[in-house]
Amino acid sequence: MFSIITQLYPLFLSSFCIMLGFGLIGLLMPVRLAYEGVELDVIGLILAMYAAGLLVGGTYSRMLLGRVGHIRIFAACSALTGLSILICSLTMNEWVWALMRFVMGVSSACSYAVIDGWLGDAADNKTRGKILATSQIVITLALFSSQFLLNIAPVSQQTLFILSGIILSLSLLPVVMSHRPGPVITDMVAMSYRQLMTASPLGVACALFSGILYGGLMNMLPIFAGSYGIDGFNLSLYMAMALLGSFLLQFPVGVLSDRFDRRKILLTLLGVNVASSLLTPILASSDLFYPLMASTAVTAGIICCLYPMSIAEAFGRVRREEMAAAMSGILGIYAIGCMVGPFTAAFLMGRMGSDVLFYYLAGSEILLMVFVAYRMTVRAPLSHEDQEDYIPQQAAMATGSYELDPRTQYSMTEGGRSLEAKVAITMAQSNPAGAVNMVKRIVQSSPEMAEELYAALAEIDEIDITRLYDAITKAAPELNFSIAEVLASSSDEATAEFVDWITENQPEKLTRILNELAENMNAGPSIDVVDVVNEDVDEYQQNATELVTYFVENHPEQAEAIAEAVIETVPDVAEEVEEILQEADDLPS
Image (cartoon, rainbow, N blue to C red; front, top):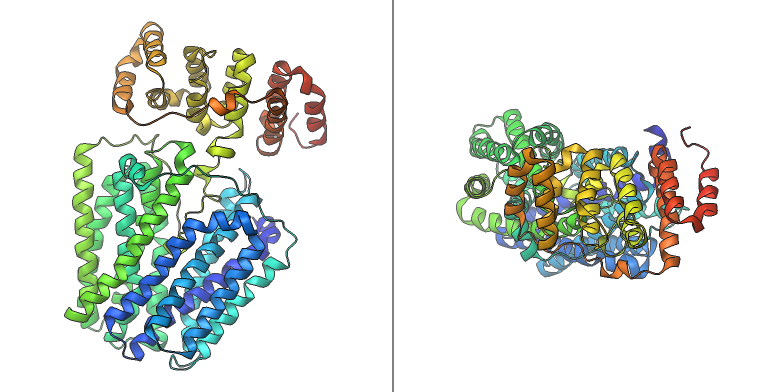
């Protein structure tokens, strides 16, 4: 763990500075606007512009990174952010503040994408989880600390704006002084909002309400606190406890949502949060500061669990090769919610008082509860094995970037297809038995790739899908029914052949597999393999050696077995493969 931090400390240091600066300006802006007597409607509109910038930045960041490069984009974003903060310190014009808030949102989305891309490029299968955990700790520590910087100078002065700009400018230094090259940007298959809504209505609804609730709470919470005379250090402590709750509650919620039906856990959490939201104004009016902090921490914590829960729910309903695109779509829905939340909350608070913030949260949570209950009546739950893992993530760091998410890591290549699938498809043209054998070996070490590999090879005429199914399920027996879901998108002939084989060889599984086929028969198109099938021999050989290299680096215990299968199928690459194995001095004997 320590060695990882040592190697990547420039990136973690930059990430800390970014979140420290954004955390300070995020608290300073609503406090200063309230101090200047700006109408709540206008405050809500200004604060909502950050989410609009986040949506634009998240949508176009990959394109910009591919064209301009990571370091240049990061430098430009740092300059723009510092410039926008300093401009806010020079004027109180609401339209200028709204525009600068939008620029901050765009810059933050691109900056986060750069950091995530670099961290993801430095990670492998063994270190990805540790790097992600370290990143989340750094982010939370920065956000927590930033709340107390508000006490350095009066909010009426320019000092805090200048300090925030200095901190964000410092985030540039560790990156530009680093020798680490920018990672390669790969294309990503797009997923429309309609496709995402069809695949996971609950995931989309959860993301939308997550944005509405989080945007409304964290943007307007300083205004609510100020109405009860909570200011200075007490305001910093109050906001810091809300952020700490948003981090700590994710761990027990994650454990529960992975072990039980996620929808039931979500319904229970929302019920608890409705009670907590209704209790908070009562505690505030009773001047019970510490219980107020506790109830607000619970409210913020549960709300912040909704965003990662929406991703996990959506991931459980889409194919692995669609996860990266689904995450991007979830971010867009979340950002839309973050635009609606603060403006709507501010509008209501301006007409009915500050307490209505938490009544607004409770009402929104009740609406989501109704939708969750409805979805539970119309769609069967996923089995615990089919549920995707809940990965804790700070909603403040929502970027749609998938590089650090272990659920999306299956060696993506052009078009969203993994290198393993690409090689297996090409190999199937000349040696179907060798392709099946290679897939079996891959699934033994990486069972999460089974569905993608099966979907890819099931479209190849030379492949006997019954033999393929038999090989995969022998390597990973728990995938019997997951493979049936994938088969539902194959041709009618392939499905019929498969059912005949199951009837003859595994009749005890026939009923459940037929149910899986019936449920998923209209799930959507399968992987397009036309382009891969037509690859030439040179590219095929190159892919084969790349596959050996990948296993040497990521699964050394399987590398020799994969190398033997490659040499058996493509004798011409034997010399190159042997050189790769000789250069790897840490392979298990």
